[in-house]
Image (cartoon, rainbow, N blue to C red; front, side, top):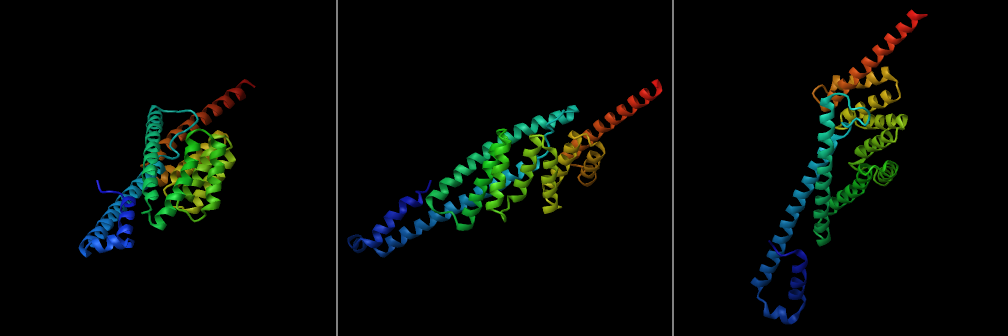
Length: 261
């Protein structure tokens, strides 16, 4: 393992600014010190790039899992399996993110993080605070954290995700009208974005919970039509089947009641 940047700085400075050392050290030795310093810096920069790429991969995994957990009735065994698998994966990914942020923090302390990367990292840390609160079931605090994040970082690449998670927070708190409105912001902000399928799905779920079954079917049908091979489509089809069963039951009960009269 190469010695850290911090260890080489005082060595180089002492060589440069101490007259005695300057006279004692040859030009080649100074060049070797500078070359070694550059080598360490380049190695750390590569580590930083790798860590940033890993964080982007983990975030992509988080995004691909959002909206798949129906917090109402589980429905089919297929849906039950998806929910359990996703809960485990979310927990695992959260641990990965924690480890990566610690790795980046160590690099940042050494002082080798470029300014643009440092800004992205700081945004990610603020965004992750909302995720942590949401995963802990602190929905109101999570919503406030995401709202503060958006206010402070309106142009961040994490804004779309933050809006989506605000919708999830409202959904978990059973404030379904507010959740529908937030999910619609996601769709409007980026109609072709990665969060759209999940946002449409949760809008359908929200209308289902409000017993607006026809509205629910509209959004769920959009999911199955636009994203037929997705996990969101599996959950949407399952919920549509559930709605059809409920509507058929209500129709049968109304018919029987009319016959009795």
